[in-house]
Length: 268
Image (spheres, rainbow, N blue to C red):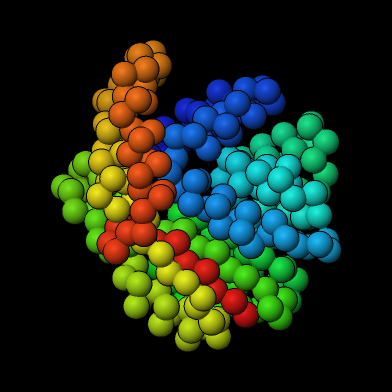
């Protein structure tokens, strides 16, 4: 099962329609449990900041987190990066069109960046599992952060993250450099780069795993079979949403002792 082709279909739809893109961001915010976790940490860490600050969106993708940060925190200046020229150009065009000039985007490779004490906050959502040289990237993050700066990482765990426990033909793991991280492993790697880990929380526990299968995995499997299933998605979610939203809420409110996702905070 492949995720990038599906993402491209959505990207083609929203590219030239700013209002549809904003509604798409809102839909992602509802449907993806990882966004619930990431945005909660953003509110906790950035909500009380009283001075202008800079955020590095390390793997900005569609730009939904940059948009959320810029809208929610008016003192933030956001610099988003991605490897895909098309996606970067698309984000710059969209953010200019809606007047969010505090967000800019560029093509950068996290293994090669040379930023030095430039950012107050670095956000990395579902990126590190794609990069073989993760320790090199963690060192680059350390160098890029200002003293006292914060790094927030959301990534699959090694307890079935990315559906790695499934047959490779049915999981997203073929697009990843690793199955996921163990809590001790990612802490050791971050500390070897000079960062101090403040917290590691498991996400996607038992309820989150059920949500993932019903709310994301099954629809993605159908779309990989045929793009015609896009026409059926609204009807699928009319039936599924009353089931998956309570699952998401239960996972979000539970202190999971295990889970297929990790939410990690570290400081310089």
